[in-house]
Length: 271
Image (cartoon, rainbow, N blue to C red; front, side):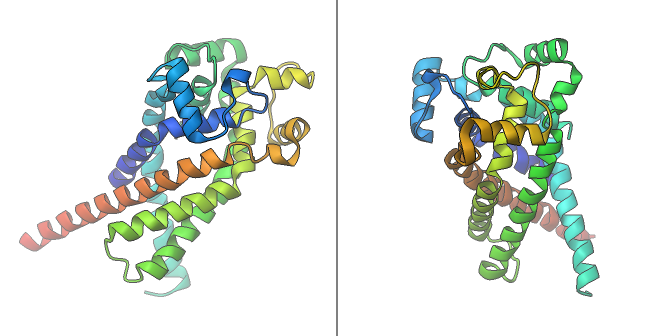
């Protein structure tokens, strides 16, 4: 759990600016000033027009949620892998953080701080606003993690069959796993972003009053506004974000797991 928490914080902190770009590029009807052709162009434009620290807005709430979320994430992974291996072969409140993060990442976001965003959303839209994308996020996370872990284990089986601590193999396996899982689940991520941000321009153009909720409504809205290509908005930014993110997460996690396990074994031996 310690290894997972450190890995999660490192992953989201280092790659946060690209995550901000991804959120904006998934906008279904972006402001003319917030239309980008590539991740590099977007980062450059955001820094030049909105300030050096703009791509990092909302990073504090992400770090707050990443630690406990990834601690449970990797702990469950290890437990389930061991349990299923023994069976088959003998031998967090991250939803609130996600909504706040994506609202603060949007172009012309009116929120000055995390607390300001939480209070305003709760007061104007109710506590349920933080869970509008819950079913979509859950539906996305299940296939994402399934593809992610299967690909990682597949890569490890081929380039590190002895399962030793090998930084290069963990980085390569993590990057490939992240890229494949990210590309495959982009349509669900676009729907999640729409539910989290409640784009006023996009909803108004379809005469949708009130707040959009529900996975089916999100799918229908994305299709009405962008057709099939609309489901893959920001796919480039999502893959570019996930490749180094998962590479960092796995390499940091495997390092701390190795370090902590080695330290524990040395302690036992000395006793």
